[in-house]
Structure formats: structure tokens, C-alpha cells
Amino acid sequence: MAGAGTAFRELLDLLRNADQTFLTGPRADMDETGVAEGYRHLTHLLGYALDLHLEGDAERPGFVRLAPPTRRILGENVDQAEALPEQPTSSVGRLNELKARR
Image (cartoon, rainbow, N blue to C red; front, top):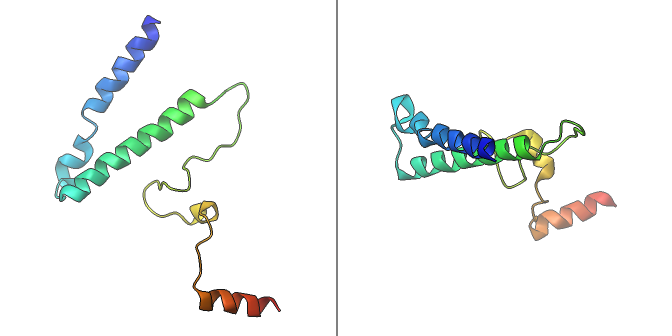
């Protein structure tokens, strides 16, 4: 049990200054929304990493979706489009779809 606790504390130590990647240097010129998005991005990356590392099974590997449909890694991704729910179309667009099927 001590090994797991030590590893967890080491992870927390690594995360302690992770926000410096966007709070200092060339990326530091952000408004409050940009800073909030930086923290959001960090927590998403942490979530992906924890899912892959802790939930992965080396004895029974398999394909998994890295990001759920509501999240983006480094912005929009065309490969993500198939995972998104179908967007509702306007009534005119829906009528045109129905006409095209005839």
C-alpha cells in the first residue's frame, strides 16, 4: 500500500506546477477565460492519462476511445465527427433530405 501512496504523492508533486506551461512564457498572455481553458485542458489530459494507465489491461489489450464525444484533444478533430450525435436540421433542411431520398 505504501508504494501506491508514494506514487500518488509523486503524481501530485508533478501536477503542482503543471499550470506553469500556460501561466508563464509565451503562452502567458491570456485573459481569465484563456486561463480557465488552460486548467480545463490540463484536467482533460489528466483524465485521459488516468483512464489509459489505470484502466488499461496489458493482458487483454483492446481499442478504446481516447476522448468521449463531448471532449476535444487539442481542438476540433475530423475523426471525432462520427462520434458526435446527429445535429438537428432545420425543417427546410429536413424537407430537402426527404425529397432527395425519393
